[in-house]
Amino acid sequence: MNIYEQCYRQLKQSGQQAWTGEGYERAWRKLTAILQALSKKHVLPAPGSVCLELGCGNGAMASLFMARAGYQVYGVDISPTAIGWAQETFSTAGLAADFQQGDVCTLGMYHDHQFDLVFDGSCLHCLIGDQRQRCYRQIKRILKPNGVFIVSSMCGQPKRPEDRQHYRAEKYQLMRQGQPWRTLMPLPRLTAELAASGFIAFKTSVSENPWWDHATLCCRLI
Ligand SMILES: C[S@@+](CC[C@H](N)C(=O)[O-])C[C@H]1O[C@@H](n2cnc3c(N)ncnc32)[C@H](O)[C@@H]1O
Image 1 (cartoon, rainbow, N blue to C red):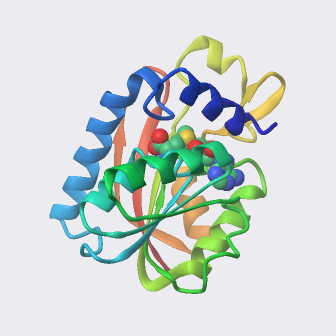
Image 2 (spheres, protein in one colour):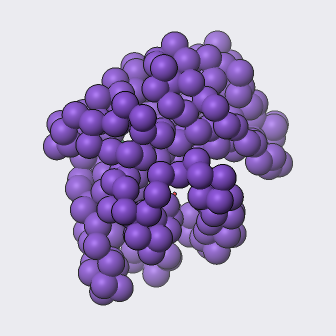
């Protein structure tokens, strides 16, 4: 079974609210502060616009914020349990959204230029090697020409000794049980990767943590 599916089964069974488990309230406060600031600065398209969250999980983060704010919300996640969970909670709350199980590297269910906003729900850093380029190609296809792509990603270097031990610096990969687990690259490298893939970051902010940093990059198509 896929590792993400396994995680969501456990999270749901143990009564957690979302992917971040006990850290949900903190993660929600951080995300909403970021999205509210971007909305004030008109970086987000106007409410009513069509947005997609990549790696939406159970919908309890960006998708929830966007739905409450009046956007037309779509979400995709690899875990069927997460998607079923998102559908259930949105339906109970009377919120509309289209959640589908799928892989962000092959987004054939969406048509060309469908979205005003594609929001990376901390999914990009889960993609390893050529998965990243495959995902970028899909985003370029489904984003409207004047659309916004917001990346929310781990960045920098691992700071804790136990993570440094399991970091393959030449590939920017954190390893877990001998397998690449996360892509973790310095911000200039991430910005350069985005530029080489057709996205220009016009607004970037970084939040520092004791383990590694987390960047929000607001991008447009080049
Ligand atoms: C770090 S979690 C974040 C979940 C949620 N967006 C949040 O903010 O709490 C990353 C999410 O990406 C999903 N994911 C990982 N790889 C994926 C892929 N290739 N296609 C679709 N979803 C993927 C995982 O199932 C997980 O829900």
